[in-house]
Image 1 (cartoon, one colour):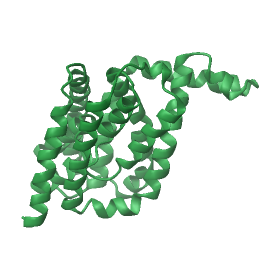
Image 2 (image 1 turned 30 degrees about the horizontal axis):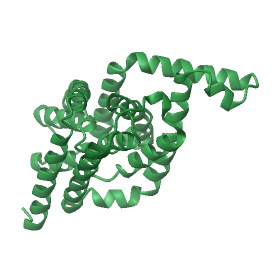
Image 3 (image 1 turned 45 degrees about the vertical axis):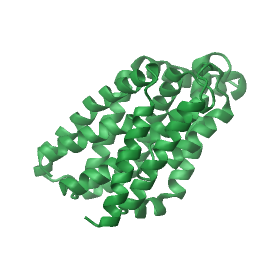
Image 4 (image 1 turned 135 degrees about the horizontal axis):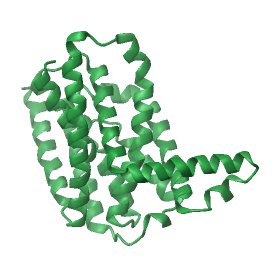
Length: 279
């Protein structure tokens, strides 16, 4: 993998991780086009950490408040306060609780579906089908969402369903951000709040996935000749991820989310055709 390929893949990861078009599906496609199949595990970990850095950079104030709230909840519980009372003291503590609730089904589904997902990553047809499915989810959410409920009024059931949607997005071609934002919209969340919760929810997911891959990464090591390309790819994922987050908010505020649905339908149809033609 040279620097140019690494930068292209890093930019693709950063943009598609947060734009509702599926990062996994696009990376499968890009790797085949660029013939960049070597050292995938190490590269995946680095570019995912790059997208994590982009989220933390954009939402640094929210992340700091969530961290403080989590410490506060833990301290109160340690002093004998009930968990329910501890999380009810302010909206940030409730947000910590909702992120935990949403992360549980994601973690369970990610581990349970891993054997199936590994096989799907080798299937162009599967990627194409799930890209089309992503477009249908985006279209449905855009059509029926009311966008009136503030994030502070999201309940545990809504958070759990968003987590289930995120768990389904482990399959290549089904967008994590698209699934979580759309589910938030279907529960009536305001557009900005649906996106905000989706992006904050990505933090434990990316951290968890990277932690699971870390032992294999350490065993595999990183060849010296790949250090520069991998660093370039990581930087590209940070910059493009930062841009993508702002693009999502802009599209939601201007009610142009359907653009992403049309895009995933077109790309999905093209990938399905590619699979059948065997190019």
